[in-house]
Length: 96
Image 1 (spheres, helix red, strand yellow):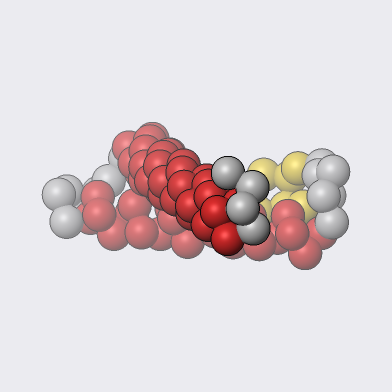
Image 2 (cartoon, rainbow, N blue to C red):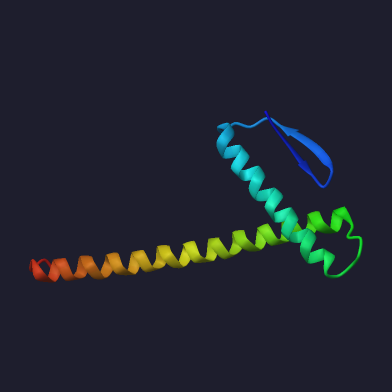
């Protein structure tokens, strides 16, 4: 079980991963909420909790999609380099 407090509300979760990993995820979410709260504070004196949570979700989703694009580019680069290496090896060994 893992218990965290977000914006004054306590949540308890059952987790299938080890406690340290779950705590790392929870800490990341809490850090993201703090960043979103700071973003909202620049726009209003008393930011709404829902607005903070929506902004948190959007920020995390944006990070996810950025990492997903970077991962895809990395896979394409590895595929291209592997193909070039295979072509070079085949030509050096007279297999082409």
